[in-house]
Figure 1 (tube, rainbow, N blue to C red):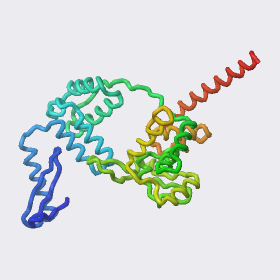
Figure 2: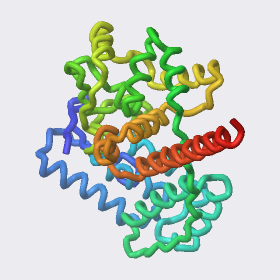
Figure 3: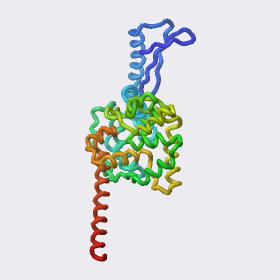
Figure 4: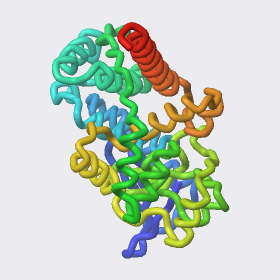
Amino acid sequence: MKIEKLPSGSYRVRKMYQGKMHTVTFKDKPTQKEALKAISDELDKIKSSGKPMTFYEAACGYVDMKRNVLSPRTVKEYAETGKRLPDWFNILRVSDISQIEINRLVNELSKDKTPKTVRNYHGFVSAVLGAYRPELKIYTTLPQKVKNEPYTPSQVDVKRILDAVKDTKFEIPLTLACYGMRRSEICALQLEDVDGDIVHINKALVLDENRKWVLKTTKTTESTRNIIIPMELADKIRKQGYIYKGHPGSITKHLERIERDLGIQQFPLHKLRHYFASQMSALGVPEADILKLGGWETDHVMKSVYRHSMIEKEEQAKRDAAEKLQRTLFS
């Protein structure tokens, strides 16, 4: 526990509990044992006061409990999820919440949110209640998942985009995205991470709950990886002296602008990872190797992209067969 010295010469210890910061001050510097006992006594007073805890207070407390073990981005998402829940649910006393209130919440959220979003909200609510109401068994019927075929940019469109950004500050980050890198990984790269034609990916730049950009470890253990890029691109990076300087969102906005100018179907930067997986699959790279190169933890997205690639190949094969038959019949 951190003991802070104040400008007045006194000392204090602080502890976040139920979304609020609680403080105990000392005239003289306490020992760690004295500080721990004092803050524990303070929290015991609050716990025994009988004040009912609302769900929102429990949500804030849950986020605080997880703050040091979750990534800054996940902490940010959890904190925002709690704020976005309906007011009527947030002010409910945790002790009064039952399956009925959870069902009502899910039903309300399902009116204007996607099944995936509803499931994410429900997962957060379940986690919070699991921490504060472990005896509550939650059995909720959730909206059926929507099966979405992942859009994969074509090789022609990707080449047009890269041609359009050639010799601009966006050439390097967009090219790296085509090699399976996430935006957060690209923006975290430093010159020393490029060794010859090998890029060492071991960190990410993300927004924390205070909307500040912070460096953290990669998204998953699998995300820490090495990829090989063309030596020409590596030399360009070394000559430039950096990978990218600018706001991460500017890369996304510039890609959108280029797509509009070229008349290309709009797709987010992340879809270039799908392009990467699709191209690796088309080149016959084993699925396990594609997973490692792209830093995927599971093969869920990989299989979706692979299936989409196979469907395109089958459709092209059908067209080729039809054209051959046409030439046979009418030539």
